[in-house]
Length: 364
Image (cartoon, rainbow, N blue to C red):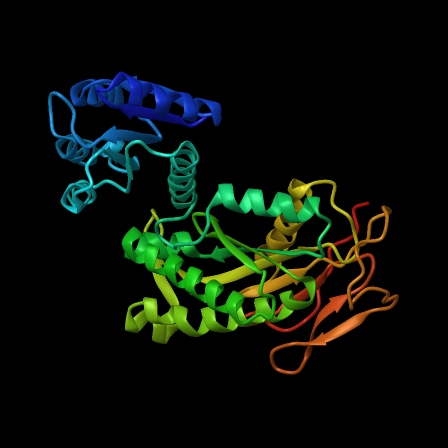
């Protein structure tokens, strides 16, 4: 659906000029002659952008902008101010009132469209970002993942989820739960910055789910860094007594005592090293399977890397391709904690999880 722009100007020629050029660029355009008409329209149907004259017959343009900003549903709508005056003070007043940009009349059609598109894109990116973590949200993750899978880039998808997060929220409340999510985001962001892949992309799916897209040869280091830093820092978010004990002492609804472990992180990894994926949903499905395997089979923080093959054409060759036997990688304490072969998932364990090996049977 095309984005909707509201044009406000009492001069018919200017109003028509702006309307026609924006329509030719693919936008839906509504027009208003006065500030009150514009506010009434915005109340009925929130526009994606407002282009308004600095002065309307019934109210000052700055007054209209303040009214838009004061209403929750329109407080985020970007505004471009049109002015025929050369005075800097008029532009400053508009920007101070909450306008995002300005154009002098008569404006160039190409500049008008470029500024409108720039503002709409900027707002779209902000809407696609998690306000809590500052990481890209579902829309941007989906778009970036579809692009990379579609271009057949060598790719690893690391899907992270927190264990015992609900218990933490129940004990300490959602505000302190937000601190855990913010920590997870920061640890993930820092790990991405040092993973060795300048094109790595981190996102926050929602809740306690996070995702990283990166080169396959960087994913093991990323997982181990995330786990090590998360396990090191998360105890600081607990009360001192609970952190020292290493678990929470709780009671269920019947008054029976039980223990809940410290929050940990589970990461499932799917890669294109040994198989093609028909689309981006397929690689997410495999990463989800690996994440679930880790959560249900290992205590503490751990990661699992899929190593199964399919019967399709070979995946894009990387430095890890061509192995016929089993590759063993050293775990965090020097033990062999990752196993990879052609028919099973390579499973790496780190942090609080005991070292060892795990398999997911090939489901071809």
